[in-house]
Length: 332
Image 1 (cartoon, rainbow, N blue to C red):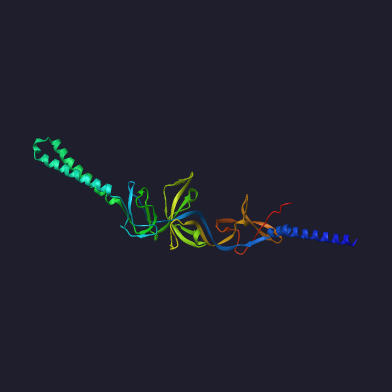
Image 2: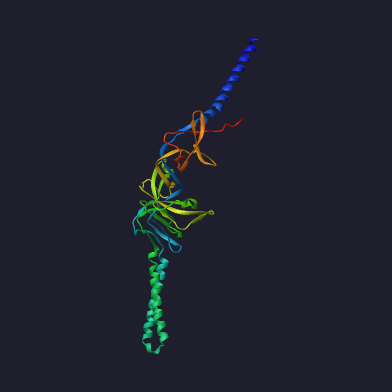
């Protein structure tokens, strides 16, 4: 009998423990949820549109040869600092030298033919004289054009900057962009803004920039260019938007990924409440206030919805007033 009695006591204790646990997890939680409250306070409300972007150089040069040809000399590598007008790469000039030599011979031949003809100039018809003159001029023009190609056998930097791409190798054939130079001291942010957001944007608009590489640091920027023509990517329409940093940082590098938050509206020292406390019905927006032991609806007029989850209250509440979030209890 004693063992059965102890067993019953143990079962009763377990049942009470389970009941207490259920009460703690369900009934008490629901009561606390029903009584969640906050007070109306004054804050700065910021509404923005967001997108991603890339750091890009303002000044850069992509250099290439006009025709595929053999590389003869390389004078710059990735990471090198180069000066304006510095020679970077040369191609094989042997073939061009032969072309120039042949062009000079053609000029000498044309001149000789014209001089010979001039000894009996009156014996030729006007159109024949013109042919001799034109032959000489044509040969000289071809020589000039061939000689002008001599400078094109060298890639010369048009800017001072850093080499970020260099694909030339001696004895290899060069084609396409061979070398890229950027000015690392002048950087900008390029973002593609959707057509649904572009209507909110304008020049000189402020923005907040965060970098994947710099944890939670926030940098100020402003819009300096919005392309008038759209860019379509995967059937989605975007507009290229350029932003300039107010205070550039030497840690920033070309190609870095950034998050762009462009401020649409900003209001300071306005009444705010968390947006989750605001409900709506056919009569408008409202919050719950408490009168005695009863919760009542208080209709309000709202303004700017902030990025931090708060909403501006234009009418219906006063600073310091307590409001409540009422949640319906579900059966079961």
